[in-house]
Structure formats: C-alpha cells, structure tokens
Image 1 (cartoon, rainbow, N blue to C red):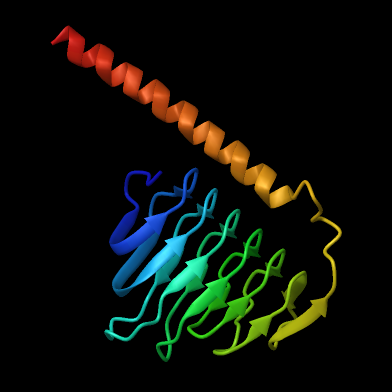
Image 2: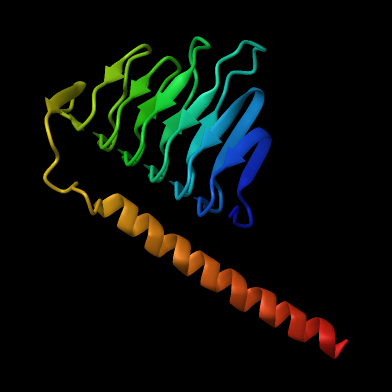
Length: 176
C-alpha cells in the first residue's frame, strides 16, 4: 500500500502487505527496486537505484523495516541485496554494493561502506566516529520476530483503514 504523499517511480515492485508511508520516496529510474512482503518504508526514507542505466537493482526480502530518514542506494552503481527480517534505523545509510543477510539490525545513524557484507544476525550500532559490529543472535529476534509482528500489525491497521475509507467514499458517491 502506497499512502498519499509517498513517491514511487519506475520499476518498483512491492510485496503483499508492504506499506510506503507519506513523504517516503522509492525510485527506480533504470534498475528495479523489489521489496518483499510486509516491508515497511517510513517517512522520509529514500530508496533509489542509480540513474545510470547499469544493472544495479535493490532487492529486499520479507519483513524489512526502513525507519524514518533511512537512505538506501547511492554511490557507485552496484546491486544491493537485503535478506529478510531486518531493521534499518533512523537516518542510517546503505550505499550501493551492500549485502545484508537475515535478522540484522543497522542502528540509527550507521553509515555502511560500499561493498560491505553483513552476515545473518549482525547488529551494527553507531559509536560516534563510525560503526561497531556486534555479530551474533539478537535476543529481540526469534522465531516470532518482533519486526514481523510490528509489520503485520501495521499492515492490518492500514488494510482496515483502507476498508473504512473505501466504504466512506462509496457512501459519499451514493449520496451524489
């Protein structure tokens, strides 16, 4: 679901239950952007493939959350591959060429390096002058995944809101 005031341009594929919040931007001028099911793209997030017509897609699996002001793409054109059940913190930067496994957390303000690879269950936090990697299972993530639960609740809310708005618009049209 793409909410009003969000910008989605070009070859963008959103999986079922995915939500793009107002003021978010997803642009695929040459290479595609593919987000799996139940992804959440919050306000002021920018996900953008390079404008150069080079094969540099951005592909993300299911249940990813891109928090406010996060930037995905930019730099030297290269594919970005993101697994499932990841969280990208407020104002973090994920440049071209990055590979992220499953169940990772890229903390607020973390700036990844082009070509950086994050194995499954990696947690990155900013330490003021850069990023510290803490590899290993994140105790907040398990089979019942906190991110997937939040994404599902958010998706359910948006679907209910859409149903109410559609019903109301049908009522208004019937009156005229």
